[in-house]
Amino acid sequence: MADFIMPSLGADMTAGILVAWRVEEGDQVENGDIIAEVETEKGLFEIEVYSAGVVEKLLFQPGPEKVSVGTVLATIRRETAVATARSIEPDERLKVSPAARKLATEKNIDLRHVKGTGPQGAIGLADIEVACGKVTKEKVASAPTELKKTTDFKAGMRQAIAAAMSLSNREIPHYYLTTDIDMSRALNWLIEQNRKRSIKQRFLPVVLLLKAVAKTLKKVPELNAIWVDGQLQLKQEVHIGVAIALRGGGLITPALHNVDQLDLDQLMIALSDLINRTRTGKLRGSEMTDAGITVTSLGDLGVQTVSGVIYPPQVALVGLGRISERPWAENGLLGVRQVLTATLAADHRASDGHLGGKFLDALNKFLQEPERL
Amino acid sequence: MTEIKIRETIISGLSLIAPEADFDELSPTENIREELDIDSFDFLNFLIGLNEELGVDIPEDDYEKLVSLDDLIGYLMQRLC
Image 1 (cartoon, each protein chain N blue to C red):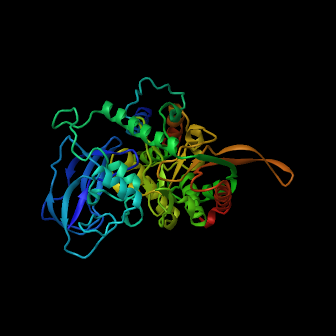
Image 2: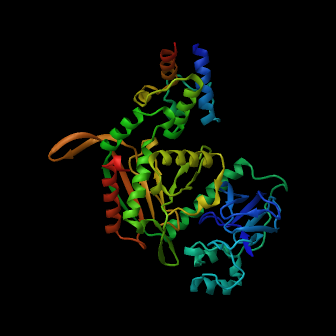
Image 3: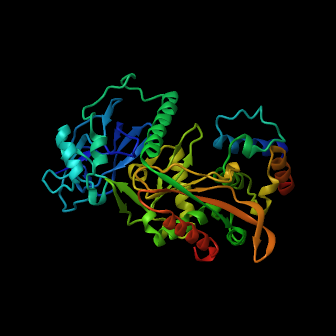
């Protein structure tokens, strides 16, 4: 038997509202199937199950009540032998850090009902802290069948961002490194590519930048990682969080999956899909949690340098400014080039400036060979 | 294709991106991307929408000519008429 729990969709989430079930009792589910919709301060999300089997019991009905992260929402009877990282087994084979186990014992928290966010679903101290305090349902002050209004949504979004960014500034000793990158070659290559393409197939410069970041992370994997329980945990996959501004205010940083494995056409399609789903409230739960780094680009607004705040538990954020014509000295000659200022914000607990410097150097080199991206 | 029809198509496309905007208040000579807070992704989608509605494939080299509502109308009139 596996439990399907209210997931944590980010460092800022303590509870969510179960809006709908996508399955009924008795339905067969596969690993990765979307089985529920959950609303948080950041919007509505499709939630995947990480067990295969049959939905045995739906323990909660959709409603306006907030349900704490870690609360069991449904039970899944396993009928195929697929155990996954995020299914919670009723036996003692849970991976729990000693500090997390100590705190759980002190707070009388049942570890079987806590979602681990570490490698192989290991439960860390942060997971217990999230599960603390609010194990029972809380009532929210709204009409029984009415979901939150727009004004509440804006306020909630602000609160969620405030919580995550305060946590980041409180706990993460940021350091910043900045470099100017000559984008002339990359943009010329892009223009040539786009001339051959219909309007629907054209690339935006950001796909080159995202692909270059993905390739750079393969060379500097220490920045594709999370910091949990005082330890750096490297990510195997290259999932990049992309900061996407919402029209009504606020932003969401969902993960673009496996960026290193996508060619530029696939990446453009995946990015368009992700932006559209972010702005229409159709993101999946996993996309909110599995990024190993975030990229934020404010170039459209004419910003030159973006010194960002790291989204915990990640350990780095790449801030990209506007690509603009600037004077550029090279080989004793002064010319005009298209220049991008890239800023790495990194967690000094997890890496040092030397490593950050290697990251920016590799990023620059990849962007000088756009045809190889 | 009349100017009125082109204008309607443009406004219709922009309102998909910026549904909250008051287009009666939009000056025809203002920078629409700045005024309506349209990023490069939304702008590309807007041009794809125009392409679907009007059949005009606007080359990337011409993007810089399309700053204001008047620019867009003038450009599309030239391409379509």
